[in-house]
Image 1 (cartoon, rainbow, N blue to C red):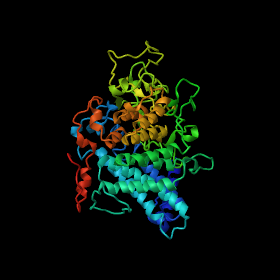
Image 2 (image 1 turned 60 degrees about the vertical axis):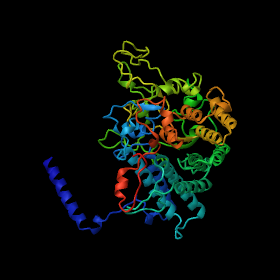
Image 3 (image 1 turned 180 degrees about the vertical axis):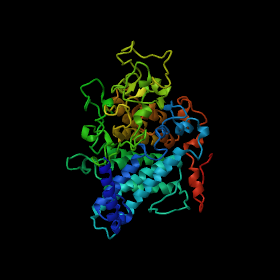
Image 4 (image 1 turned 120 degrees about the vertical axis):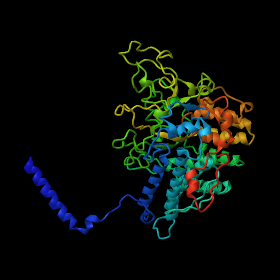
Length: 552
């Protein structure tokens, strides 16, 4: 053994001497950084677009950033509203506390800083592509250039629409920034809105339809932008702006009448022969994608390794870390902590491992749905749990509140939309279930909102009844249609899918919707219809004034 070690050391010394004599040994070659000078061909731009989509996906997934690496970031957009409240103890979930106890919401809150920086990173990456793809020296057909620019402009509009909804007036940046800049000013809302409209109008014209999105050699549809995604976002943006409701309705009609999408009214997919219903089928792992039979999906984040699906969101586990990098945690956030209840085992039918970071409000569970509403079925909302450990004395019996049962953390009614169990990852580090970002159900809701705002209540009721018919809910008339009813219907249809906080901020209803519906909510007021501008952004902006939002 000593002889072998001596030979190994001697060999390493010789190798070091040889390589040290070569100047090229010190040269660094970067193969994966796409800077402006490297954006010179279609492959480079394709890689840059995939990078943009990956940056977008960090809104939904964990990352190396301390805030995005917290599962609490997902709860920020649901708790302190009418649909959910915080179940996690303070030391486990510090980021969501200010969004229930609004007195604690200040400009130093880390979650809002993450939202701000996430958006501007996305914007800068998009600006890089938009500017460089139009350089005269770039040898590329104009149609290809326009398609690349359209995809970048779509994501830039996503970022600005998010910023405006959360913060109101924000700085407009349309050129890449490569160095320090300390003189940002908040642009008027109409300037930001005009940019969003221009970007999305260009995008919907120059993006392909969902049936024409590029496919790989195996015929699989890439997870890439399509024109219906642009139209749907434009409809929501018009509704937020006010006074553009007819335009919003027209954008919804473009999606609905495209012939590319349909509500899922019949059983389909990998569990269609098992007990369930058509609504629940859409959220079963393996059923979310268009290629898997889901014709309602408009935009799906495919949780695959990027090497197998272009634009896919990875789920790799970090070395020595407790949380995965790039792994959405919706199952943990929404799911019950049932596995810690004596007599209960982790299993597929109960959705895998949850940790009850959020719980549904009493209003959702007891007042929102008709009993017969499909969206209220046991396949969509789980209210009952049964002891499933064969070795437990009460095996097969209903778990009911009583001594020894912590109903605030363990046995919690839950939405089944995020159920997903991976037998290779029983602990539940990574969630490999796809994320439906847009679907046709929401298109009808946006259309009904646009019709209501135009005073066309009968038409709005007709639109809402399309969704209600799918769910076996009682039909309504124009006299039933109010903004509150539409927001109720959004909760019934999009529970645990939509960003509920942004919906209530966009519609100016956060304060009124919390009253009588929210749980553990204190201190909410009209100022919370906007978030505070991050203090660090104000302080670093030393060469211009960045005004704070009123009340903060």
